[in-house]
Image (cartoon, rainbow, N blue to C red; front, side, top):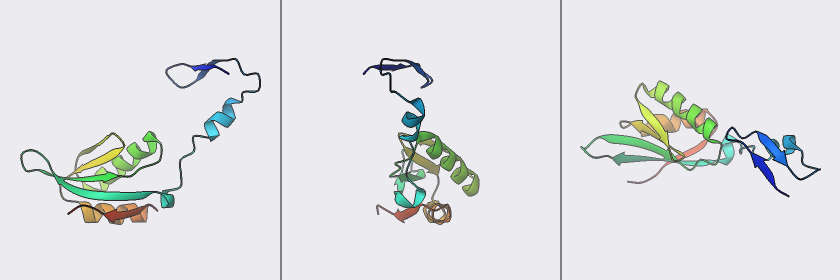
Length: 112
């Protein structure tokens, strides 16, 4: 059966008489933090600047952005969330791992 949604994700029309939009929303639940295995890398960008990169997320984009904001605040630096990765300016890999573990995520160092 066909269904259409507008740009905001709200249901506009469905040809399925048994369709229940509440069930559709429940299917989008993300896994618990302790079920996600995150990896924290330390990369060098152009110009020799260091960046700590966190990836391996299986949760919703909104949750990733909220976690990125928390990590930026706790580290006292800037950063961004791009393509389901959190980028934090500077060498903060150890501090990020401690913060992720405190939030309930499974995290470990990766890379060299």
